[in-house]
Length: 472
Image (tube, rainbow, N blue to C red; front, side, top):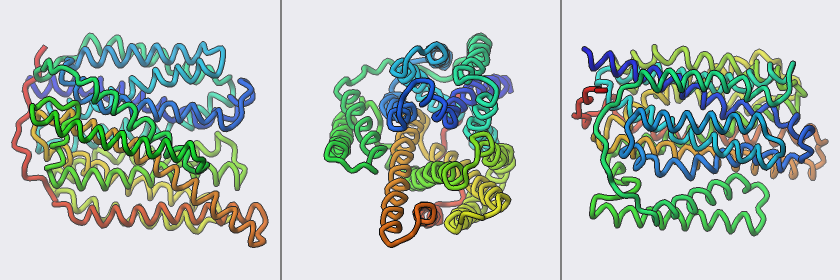
């Protein structure tokens, strides 16, 4: 009983910290127009605020599996929160655009550690029979925070300058960091495995250039294509290096996790779902603000109910998973997501806002019914010593999938818009035509994800490792 109470206390502070750092990931979405004016930059430069964040996540996450095996929970928590607070303070004080980009990189470094730390700790302290419920509670941070980001920034920007976006977050992060560092208990044993620097370099070059190349794919310049190719080759070299190191049981990122069929299929399905979700988020922002001329605040408020519903339903979905397994959630949830995305593909210039709200809430509920079971099953199918590596792989592939989903959505949007304009459609009509086709692509991706989900079992049968006792 004491171990359970201690484990609950550990997760409480990790969830609070994760909520803050994930909120920060989307809080800049509505601030781009204001930053372009205040910092005298164009739209292409402003996009580096999100691109740099995504690149850093892709570079750092692959080494977190090794890092979390060397550090205690308290050490990793203190390091991540201190780094995040430093980056947030630097962002608030930024006197130029390059400094603000550096600040976002520092923040992203902390975010890249916090999410694998939360997932790895959850798997260690929660019994298999109760993981669905706890994972559902964790989804409060993972789902509500991104949804609140645009709404929070919209409210702040309505009355204050963009620096206050960071000044509002900073004291909350400092408070969570100070209190959490005092109350956290360490779980499990640390191992002093030496780092393979060649693997670290290959991961940085491979995943970094791949994510950047994908994020800029809509331009299709020779340099962008070359970077994407370098990224693919770098990732291939990184995989080869891990296979070599596995012979001596010293990989930076243990790829033996792919021996689990449940983990592999869940990873593929979550990557597709995440790419479709990120692509849809971008397209919906473009539709509302560019095609319908909605304000950033109105846009944030429109998408907020879906995120709140997704997070608040998380504990209920977790309990259903614990009692009845995954299939009763994933199959209806996948179907609901496909129908919602198909609904977005039929938007026009006069569509009332309430069907958009209903479709977004439906998409959010569908994804909630998918992500909680798939996260739980994927990591639950691994032995305990691979939890940190599994969570790192999940985080890394999500960054790549997010970049790919965004790139595909933008490529389809721009290509179809140009073609429709050449066929004689006016600019607004051509743009809407491009948006509908891009939404249709996301719906097709979700349909492919649903086909993968249908092959997963209701429960994992390989999870035979009991959680370890928490200790101070």
